[in-house]
Image (cartoon, rainbow, N blue to C red):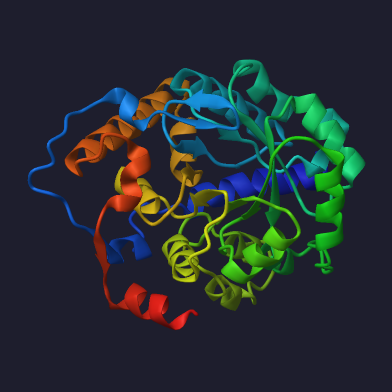
Length: 341
C-alpha cells in the first residue's frame, strides 16, 4: 500500500474514532421561533429542489469523505447506492491521489457505477494540475467539482504542503473545465473575506466546511509523533458563524453550501434559515455507511421525513422559504454577529 493510500486509511479510522455526535455546537445557540398556527400540512414535495440542472429529493447532500484505498472503495460503493436510492447528491473524497496513482480510480468510480444518473461531485486539492483535473472529471463523469482549501490540515500533516499560493492554479482549473466549481473548506471554516476574493475572480459556488464535525487538524496532529500542534484545533470558524458573517455583509454567493458539524435535521433546517441553499453531512453519514447501504438509506430517509415535518411546523409551503423563519441568538453568536464586520 502506498503512503497516500495508507494516509487515506488512517484518516477513515481516525475520523471514526473522533466522531462524537453529542459534542456541543454553535447550532445550540440559534433558536427558531415557530408559529403556533402554521396553516400547513406535511407535503413530501415541499423539500424537493433543483441543483445543477437536476431535481433532487431534498436540499441535502453526502459530503466528501474518502477514496484512494480498499476501505474507501467499499464505503464509496455504499455511498453511491444510498445516494441513488435517496436521490440526493454525493461528493467524493479528494481524487488528487489519481494524479500519481491512477490505479486507484475504481475506489472513486464505483460510486458513479452505483449511481449512474445522480449528481456526483469530484473533489481535488488546489495544487492539482488542470490537466489532471480534466481527466478526473471526465473519468468520473462528474456533474460538479469541489476544490478543497485545507491550509490548517496541511500544516498539521507531517508530510503536508507548505506552500499555500493556490489562487493562480484555481483559475487555471476553472478555465480548463466546463462544470460548476465549488470552493470548500474541510472543517476549519470558509471566511467571508476569502469568499469575496474568490467571487471577484469569478467563482460562484462555496461550501463553508465549518468546524464542529470532522477535525482534520486533530486528525493530522494525532499522526504526529508528539502531538505538538493541538493549538491548531482552535483556529477555526463554525458553520453558524460563517453563515452569520455572510448575513452581516448582506452578500450571499449564488449558491451556498453549508457543511461542518451538522448533527441532525434541525441543524440542517437552521442552516437553511441562516441563508444556505444546500446542507452537507459527512461524519454522520459515515457512521451509517459502515453499517451498510440499507442503514444509510434509512437514515437519509428519516432526515428527509423530518425536514418535511419542520417545513410544515414552521408554516412553509416549500423549504426554500426557510429564510423567512424568525430566530434569535444566544450571547455567543449575537456578539460575534455584531463584532465581525
